[in-house]
Length: 444
Image 1 (cartoon, rainbow, N blue to C red):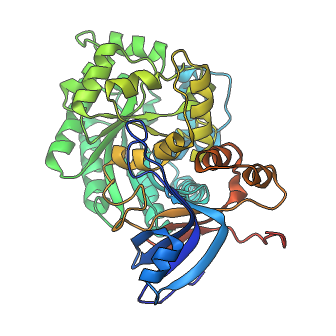
Image 2: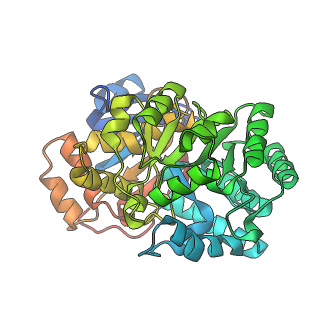
């Protein structure tokens, strides 16, 4: 698609939904049933009711997208690029699944041809599912992690990733020496960090697979380089928690391992935290460490029910992650539905509405990744990152939307029934990164 060259900008006319505030703390959903989103030079110049936007910007071009919905670009706070081919490896718990499914596949990424192909496939699937920003576990191999950075830049996505660091407890081919882990990480930082929309994330696999010396390397990299992010796993599975306790007998708990090396804090995202204690929740909140909630993965591996209410009440920030490939796919809309479903049956679960799900999949992710000033909602001055959704005619989604009487219901229907073909267009910084060119029904 050729974007409008009009120097006065382009107004997209459609129903608009976004959550510029924390939906767990205050009413956050802003909606415009006949909305106008003004884009100019890749930035959101205005958002509001279409008649007002049009009147104030009469020289801008207009693209009529009525019948569909504009939401901010989706933000995935936790996923793994080498694991795309093991989605659906069911029936195992975490450590067993790692040994028999994930780690053998991750070893294949040592082949440069496999790494390049997988990176391209991975970023295409992100874009096709409406994900415009992602925090991604890279590979244990530096050349494969470089392939992911390059693929994301070519695709036009905002991406954070890094070399996965480990020196024990995994397959030998996935281990690095301390010197190699530091050297290869430093090289990747120099090549990619801050290049366009790319950010480097220091990435020890998890405490069980990283010695104290390797965690010190992580600490050193963060101290030596400005603006890096940090990601790892925490409290995912009871067997894993017990194994970490044996590996670090001096530590009060799992979180204390990371705290000792200064790895908890506002730049850090830790995935899962299914088995958090009260003490850990308080310390996570105090340090402003974010948690990536991955409900489909937690269920698929039998890891447990995420205590969302306890996190929210303790003040721990939570976002949403697909956790490909233990998770069941790339769609953050489906991940939001899984969050709703699991909370409905979890002990002390939270009743989530459409605004909570939209927040978790957009603004919450931006806050967790430290890019809330750039993306996550439609406030003026932010990057023009968005997803255009539109139901195909005579589908269950279209039928349910016809009966949806308010914005919360519309969002709930979209999270429940939207499929891949619902996503018609995805943009980052105003540029199209995915377009569904399948022919539309004449009745649409």
